[in-house]
Image (cartoon, rainbow, N blue to C red; front, top):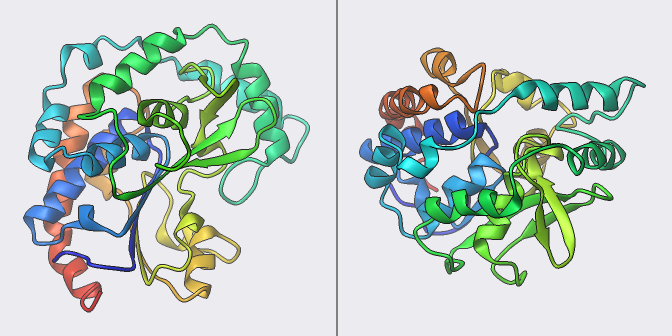
Length: 291
């Protein structure tokens, strides 16, 4: 089942394990007859930005899945990620209370996190960009409608890159993946940018106006929690969109978490996603019949 018009695919953040799971899931669904990669719009945040750029730029899902099972040397050579610095920084920003929204952080909190991130000892920006250059099959924006999210590290403003933004695809993806205290901020037009997940792990509200929105979300929350009143998902539904939420099942959660950047979890996360996608395909095909 392919989509012709008015379907949006939302791919959330979720670290390297999350992107591996999303890739496996999309392949499993495709193998089961549901090809989400043909959606009219794809919204990607952080890890989801990598996956969207890969599938929209020409990577075959089978090849992409295999890339997660046996990653190239450059990927396995990524520096070890210590989540403590990130968790400590977030704790400092939230210590005085407030700063949270239903989906992420307020702009004020994002600016405070950005200030800490810009002084953190992380890898060089050049080395960070090299990782994403190696992960993409092309350096040019595809003709497909892609939206890639990021946050200004100085004022916390939310930005959305697309092919008309004048921003190189690799830099757009890298900025969306620049997790504070873990990945280097990315310089674009003289400003520094960080992970779009600081505003929302999904940024699903960017799909407003689409008849069908399929959100593939790396989260341990329930569909009810993600769709509660005031949430992005609730807003889409109130606007008339049919929203299908796909979350990791228990076997997938067991592989993805707790450290989303642990290289030993990439292959099992992709394999769990593949199994989940294959199992989910018949029900999803029925649920979205007519779109």
